[in-house]
Image (tube, rainbow, N blue to C red):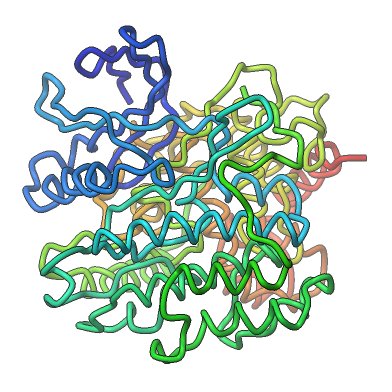
Length: 489
């Protein structure tokens, strides 16, 4: 990916994140001597009128609300090649998803953050806007003073407002956080869909994972959660939207009553701020993935831009903007909780590796396994190119397979080899293992090595062999050696 040097009067320093439809860059406002985040529409979408209009509409909606509880837009323009961009608040502490990856949250801290999101959502609804994609990766955190932070809602890429609320709607949202009506064609989701998303987000903050279909009380996963909290959160998650809390304010007030206080804004930070700073894929599996992609494409008809990509993070339009930091800072895992800090894991990839290795709760999956597999696949070579096997990048992805697991899934064009960057391929590895790994949970043997074999060959072959197939044991042994080397002592 070529780094643009500037967007209008804003200098561009480095890439912060990339998704299916846009990239986000760390920029600098020379006139005001201030860092900014610059969101630029991806080149291959710039000529799609509907996508371009939705991109600009996101900036307009954020500007309309113009609240410090949401990411604020300061400027908009076009690059020399015609791609639109907009300039917005820079969130130096990343997202709630990043925060959850570092360590579980104490219940009071989880409730405090949830109440902050309630306030921002209420401001959004006050402008007649429905977000439709509330989740941890779409809530940013920004330092506003030495010991204070600000929580901001971001990413209005699939938001609806005004008369569009009553027009035909297609399924859109992120699985695990979307209300049942969002999965229906013409489900006409209104602000109560966001109440469901708010409940799912709060559930995740309290328990470390989004709610499942069974809607178990949060206290079953986090004993410190009290029955009154259970009741408040489960009401937000009611399948019948008429039975949910009527407004975000009502939900927030109910949460406040469970703690006996209402927080003020901005709020002191009670925790330390983290430092900143395959070889061949088999045709059978590719055919299954192609079929899944066709089904997803069928849902995405009519030119709508959907976030229905089958994973709990759904990065497609994310403005998750934690800086990359210095190459030697141990990004995302500064204390070596997940990975040894004295091994050859490139520090600039540690945050991506931790994210992929904690994508879901699956026996055997860990950041150490992700790192071990990347070492075995490419030796951490982000520029690996093996046209003979049609494999590219740090995880040796085949483009026709990666298209299903990249941000945005099959609704995004198949990536070119040059587009298979670590920012795309490492999280996709986590998604892939979370999906296919469920099918081998009961297979005997080392669950981590079984997962590695699933990636190298297929879940069906691991099931058939009742473990690592004979032809892949040398690969599994290599992964096992690296795994032992990378696990924290």
